[in-house]
Image 1 (cartoon, helix red, strand yellow):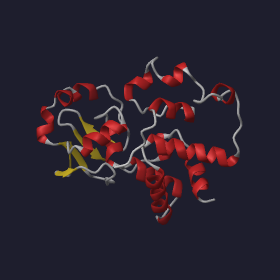
Image 2 (cartoon, rainbow, N blue to C red):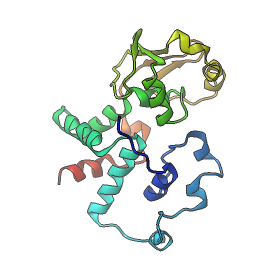
Image 3 (cartoon, one colour):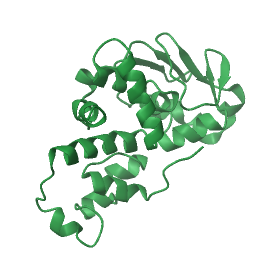
Image 4 (cartoon, rainbow, N blue to C red):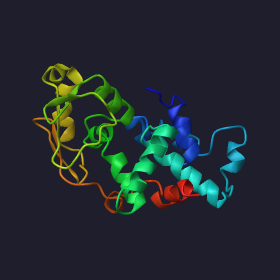
Length: 211
C-alpha cells in the first residue's frame, strides 16, 4: 500500500502545528517544531515570520494538515470527500466522521498504539479482531456498537502485556469505551468535530475541493 515517506518532523514544521506523527516524542523537548518553529527549506525562517497566505493557500494548508494527520495520500483523501458529499448532512462533518472511524484511527484514539502509523502497522499484521473476526485493513470504517479486541495470540507480545497499566491513566475520547483489563474497544457513538476540536478547518477543506 502506498504511503507518505516524507520525514515526519518536516511535515509538522511545514504545517506549523504538531500532527503527533511520532507519538510521545512530540510531547518532549526533542520535537522538531519546538526547536525549529519555522517551515523547512532555505527560506523557511523568513517565510515563518509572517508570510501571508491567499484564500486558496489557507484552504490548501488545512487540507494538507488533515491528510497528513490521518496518514493518507491525495487520492485516498479525495475519495473521502467524494463519499462525504454524497451523504446527507454537513459535508465537513461527514468527512470528519469517515476519517475518525477508520479502524487504525480508532485504535490510536483508544491508546492501544502511540501513533497512527504504528496502529496501521498493527492492523496490517493482523493483531486485531473486529466483532470477533480478524481485520487486517486499516481503512475499514467501524460502526456504532462495533467491538475491537486483540487476537489471542497477540496478547503474548510483551508490549501488549503492559498496555492495561498504561491505559489506566489515559484520558479517553467520549465516543469510545475502552476496557483496560480485557483490552476491548467499543464504539459508543459517532465522533463530533464540535466536541473533539480537530486541528484543521473542515470548512476550508470543503471549500478547497468545491472550487
